[in-house]
Amino acid sequence: EEYCMTMLTLFKPWRSGRDLRLDENTMWNDVFDTYEFSERQTQIMKFFHIKYECNDARDDYSAMRRQTGKGG
Image (cartoon, rainbow, N blue to C red; front, side, top):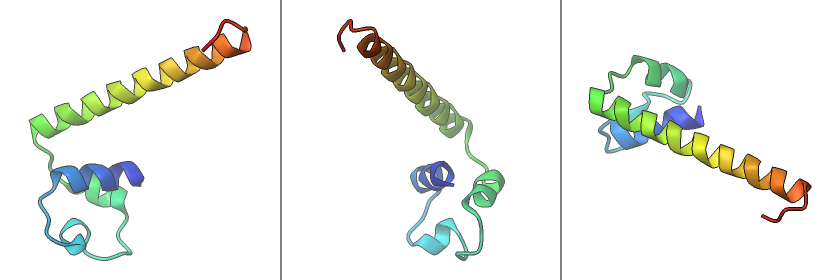
């Protein structure tokens, strides 16, 4: 839900919250799934995924080094 809301806020034109989601009973996932993102927007979202995957790997590696006593 949070990811969908964020991507819609970034890429779907809006002036008020109702432009993003008609009512509070509508799930952000449903709006996200029905919105037609451009090819460029989809590409940018893939870059966001790559960045967070790299951050996760970095954090995992740092935690492993701390556990083995090799610093952080």
